[in-house]
Image (cartoon, rainbow, N blue to C red):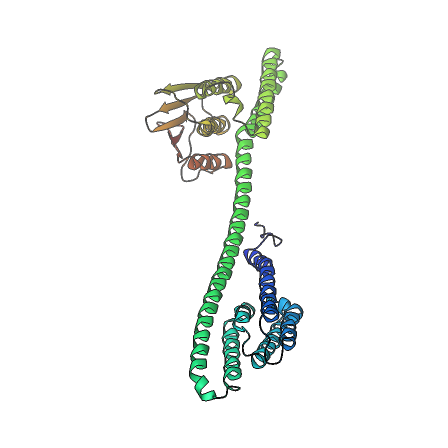
Length: 404
């Protein structure tokens, strides 16, 4: 079962919005700086036809409109604030142009036109820009003594201003749109990565459960099987009043229980199998063969061909588990008298072969148990394979091959 991505996690779109809110203070500072500069020019420069006071009051009206409506409009709190500010600001500016034609009105254009594009979407911004420039054209041409003479220059100025403003505004909108699209893509990638991580965690948990199941089957379950078989043998010897054999079987039970306890501790600690803790793989296979011979009476021999070399902890564990599983099946199912564990070191691979002279099996009806399936799974994880075939002339032969 996968877990959904954490909804409380940060999103790139949220980060982009937070960045825009952080930049808003610079818009506010720039707007007030322009208005302050315009006020300074009015107060320092020569008065207009109607004196300085009307122009100063109208500039203060723009500042008040920005404080009440413009700040909230730029922070995307509502379209009504944007419209209210733009109407108030442009009415004040157009009135200033009418009352004081010599006023440096172009200075405020650097604030008002960018604010249009920062506040509106692209199409409304184009319309607002066109309306503002049309109004400027009217207030410049209409009061003139010879309006017809003013039309060409004013028209060219308005058209150039519209083209430049629209080009810059659309360029900014495109950059913002790409940033928003990139933020959405990043959010989708983060969500996908979180989902993949959840799937990988679930798969890891499942793999670990499977690994522990195989460990328990290959160690503890086989040890308990030995304890049961030895306990029955001890009971049978006790019924025959064979005290020596009974004591021998009880000693084997104790030794098997000690080994099982050690294996259990190792599984908990996620270490390598107990047989490999203080000995090589070859020594571990020799000890396994000797233990099998003592516990069951089946003569088990081990041999090695080739030059022994370290295979890595995982591969050596798999080889040892393969030998344990094969000998466990020999003990329980084969009825064999002799078995052999052969380990072959070759240049590109290592092969484990466990054979016996038991009753064998019918390949068409043999039941595949958990142990054999788990062994195949272990070998496959390392790029190897396990095959079980009838022995010649009888018995069973298990072969495990792993790459070196």
